[in-house]
Length: 490
Image 1 (cartoon, rainbow, N blue to C red):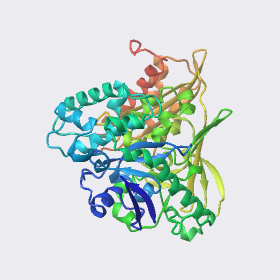
Image 2: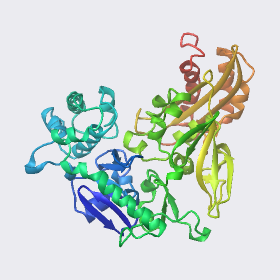
Image 3: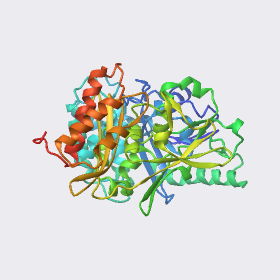
Image 4: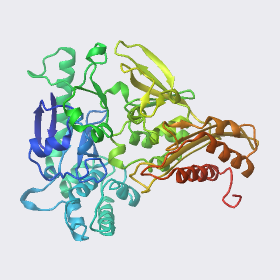
């Protein structure tokens, strides 16, 4: 059973934890402001805000999420906000809504609610509002009518208003200005009560007469009793929504021991449920991969990055999984744990046996990922080409790590997706680089070697010849973006 706040109402429900938050909001609670669009996380029409207590337990941090891909069980203990939950009394508009009206940002209106919620989430963010960040907040919302310029003007108008927002404890100001209702101020205490009830239930206490546990099966459960593992839901709820609704699921998105990023010496370890957005914002990751924000801006959209987990991307086993390709070039390892708590580490490159086939046992769950931090002088780059620059599945993606000393490549590791049945480590290509000087001739040799070890097929994302050409060109991009060669040399 799940327990959470939906707008200002406490919800207790025994609806399946693997069903979607979107369906619960619309069909169970009859809140029809949240729209059904693509059901794949692409259009943003179903965007809601999901608030969670921070580490202090005193502040609720809100993130925009696509409710069509949010497992209902992941709402447990949180504050879910739909457009009905921000609307002011007597039909007046919030500043976000007013900005969209003022700039003509709504035509058919179907997508408008999603834009409103994403921009409201931006207003609630603890990060400073900038021209870039306000536009980034709506990168997961699609509008077929306006051409976006009116919406961009609305976002710019909103950003000017938010320049007056206090740097700390901004919620009273936001409520006074009408961005959110006054009841938001009560949410930290209400969510703390839910957290206390969960703690009491887990320890056998009696703080509540009807404690509502999370919808997760214990990791210590017998192997036969293990449920289907579900993280952010950004893949499985696209592929198998009805099956998940009818299946017992083990929710790992909120398991604290599966979250977080830490560095010990030269080793960086992250929990399996770490999200792509947490990677992008991690000081630990940014210290060793300064270009990571540029890389991850090519990976989905802000709402999806806030939901999709790193391990989920690995286990999806897609030949073009963006995070998989990135971490293969980092020579990452994964920790696997069975229901009986047996653990082992495996190189990520050994996880894939064939198309959508894994070498791990059905009873094993990924619990952690680790890799050695690149040195400051190492070259690292990630590239992706898709039909749309953003919010699309790759035709080809690739990453490269190169260690260069005195103009000579001493170590190399390249990966590529979309050019074979599994995410590939280009071992022959990497070997071809080692011991050779940084030069156009060395690059050409690597390009030839890569063509020999890939086996792309023609599909909806491009022909075999197109994918071969893409990888050929992207190897050049690696050398240019890392400063090893210039465009003029090529």
